[in-house]
Image (cartoon, rainbow over all chains, first blue to last red; front, side):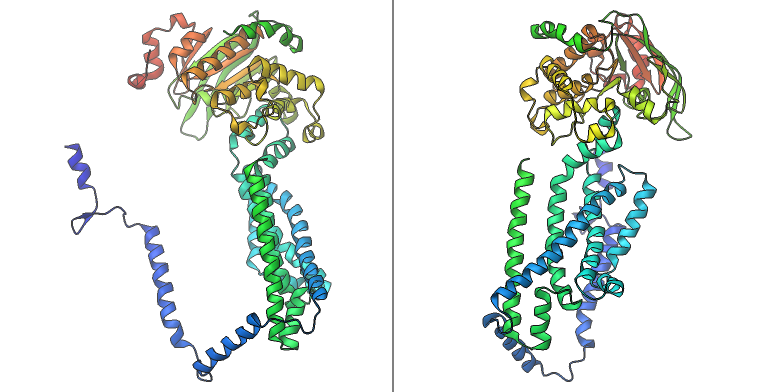
Amino acid sequence: MEAASSVQRLKVRHGKIKIRTFNRSTFVLQLTLSFILLFTIIAPFFLDYSAIDIQTAIFYTLDNLKMMFLQPALNQVTLGAALYQILITLSLAFLSTLIGAVISFFLSIASAKNLMPSYISNIIIAFNSFIRAVPTVLWVLIFAIVAGLGSVAAVLGMTLHTIAYLTKAYSESIEDIDNGMIEALRATGAKWWHIIVHVVLPQTSSYMVSWTFLRFETNYGVAIAMGAAAAAGGIGFELFMASSFYYDLHEVGMITYFALAIALILEFISIWIKNRLIGSR
Amino acid sequence: MPQVLTMERKDMTEYKTSENKGQQGETLLKVENLYKSYNRNTLVLQNVQMALKQGEFVSIIGPSGAGKSTLLRCINRMIDPTSGSILFDGVEMTTLNKADLRSQRAKIGMVFQHYNLVSRLSVFENVLHGRFGYKSTLQGVLSLFTEEEKKLALEILDKLGMKEFAYKRCDQLSGGQKQRVGIARALVQQPKLLLCDEPIASLDPNSSKVIMDHLKDISETMGITVLVNLHQVDVALKYSDRIIGLNKGSIVYEGIPENLSNMAIRDIYGSEIEDLILE
């Protein structure tokens, strides 16, 4: 009796039992996917190719890529100068990550919903999403109004974006802490700062370090772009000179390889740190 | 009870602030007309009255959702009661300001179902967390514990059979071991009252017995009042000096275990009596 009535409630289609029911979220998902598909198909028809012969375009692109990546060479910059410029780029990234991380730590405590009243955290979260919505380049250019184009504006802009990013990342790992631990310490009569230092810090430090390093990698990439776009110096500026000023594709290729090598090294270091931290204390 | 425990008792009492060693008599906690509601429609606690004496072992039993945890948390004001009075150690708890509440909480230890230890810290560090109620902000932040406090922590760990694990990280312990660390953290506060919220609900029968034996020993030898929330009626019958039955936020039974008849259990658990596993 009971089994029969429960079977009747099952959704059956073409004699087969459905395992998923149609609801709002699947509807929205399917709608979004079909729109993306539609635009992908119709977009190429609206592009204007009239001035370009596709065959020669493809040929020249491949030729340029060959010049860049198969025949890299340094012509205007020496090897030592290139390495020095990379160091400058790394310092830009390092500085903005460091300043950003310190400020983010305090902001993330203030914006974690399990430590602070929600109106304070909501204010910070709203501020953060505003800062994150504006691209880093734009922040750098905004700061350039007061600081002038250069490394100061670049660090300020990158720091601001880093703060917004890391505050979110940190506060999410703080919110993941088991509330029981905080409750247990409150019950002993511990003060708020005791809980921060002895519960929040030990439970989140490994996540915070790996988030910070991830942001450092991102900032390294951004710092290269800032060198080109905001005259912040470093390898990005050399890249800009080689491509737009000297039109030297060989050198563009070589600098790209340099940047890539450093990015790979950073990646390895980050994996190593993560394994050390999450593995054991 | 293990022999070791009785041997160590003498050293323990030296560190106790309380002058009483187990004799019952003085009223430590008096709860009167306690009401708690989370919203306008439902009362979680209704007109709760109870009085606990020094060194007493009292169990609160009742079905899930009866308000056992809420009652416990109202006592140290982890949850603020809606109305009523809680007189603990001569101080009215409900009207305390933040700083006074903190020093009052230091005198009340709490033990949790899920132990609530900071998993990435060592056993030793977790036990010392119990001293924060006596510390200033700076002392606590910089972990400035005196040698006496460290010795006290080690002695309590030794008493609970956990001394050898002092430097072990808490996420490497078993449930029973974690709960013993939880008890040690509460004892290092040198409390007058120990609130235990379902201390054995996540433990196997063996560990449960060890934990309950320790709690009983604490109330008998250290003169600390122990108030335990329990699911298991048989455990409550075996260990308690007194049993309080809670149903839908009201006390429906209060008395010694011997007087807890099947009728009374029926009153406490109501229609859920069928789900109760007895013996």
